[in-house]
Image (cartoon, rainbow, N blue to C red; front, side, top):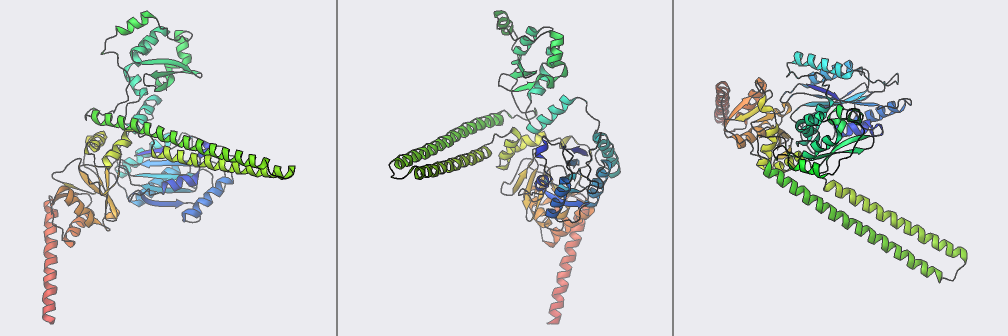
Length: 541
């Protein structure tokens, strides 16, 4: 499992109530919100709890740091624990971090491949009113993660602290975007060549051969690619910070545009002259066609967004000019009005107030329309675009998303209650029932009053679906895989599937001989019970 404290970028954005409202928002998904628990508060009602925690935070006037701690506990894919186990794990983490007596709200989310718990903690002690900021929290969290993995038999994850901050940044950027970052490309392609140079002009020549240039920006240096993407030099490697480069190469020198440099650059072999282009990371699936279509759509969307923005500006300027003309016309009329100076002054003041009111209204409507335009035509990242395409039935996009997943590299049995078929279409999807799609290609289908997770090979069923709409899930599995199914998971789940199939007269067989035998026995019992009832009715008549 992975435990992480999410830092806030700006103190002014710290808002406990806003965080909890985001965590408890279902966002139109059936399986997003699981258990919601409240600790160390006088009530369990969410609105009252938020008021209580907000009042507690406001009673501390001295603390200037963030008064809210956002802790996330994430479990490996396919691993599902009971609510009692989740509560116990949450309690142990809060106690290890020193928040055992603090007010907190825990929300379980199950809308991704990994079950995870969001814990919103009030750092202000409810009685002492002092703030608690845990020190060396990553060490305590890593140690506790290892203990819990051993106690609960979870997949063991490497919890060693990564010293190389650059590698962590590269992994985070590329994992979220799905596209090779400039930072990672420089580190992989030309960092060694950059470190070997002994003069500024040699550095400029090496960068030019790779389609890069180095510029001064603020108090530091940045690398800029041909397509305008920039990254701090010190982020690539600490030896490339401005002080370190000046210490090694002397005072900063700009690139000289000389015939000698141009000739040397022209002689560089084409195979070595690699330039940065943001492209998808995976190599085992051909994404050239999809990525070209993605870039074309984004370019068209940008042009359309610019056209609509220009129309909004023209409309705003037209309305402002019209308001000005009306104000001028009214002032000209007032000049010919037979009244005293004070009367004219009052009329002019009224016209001025009306003009300002109209001007504020025009600007307000423009800003609202512009904000809506930005929200509707926001540039989409590569993975976000793929999820939208997959949601619309693009099987190629779904295949690319599933190629990113590492679930095929896992060893051992797959955990969790799930149904599967002997033969399946890995990228087949039913767009009429899709609720959401993750960036790893897991499709959430709406079945009756619940949802199932389809990773391409199997349908995972959450535990509370067993008693609600398991017959709908079973029928959905038949529509996808056929009438011969494989049922895996706990014994209670397997028996519940057989019972649902028999009670609802669903024509299905199972690959497990014991399970199939159990289904036949239940079918015979039901037939025998019906015959017995029929014979009893006849005798009574």
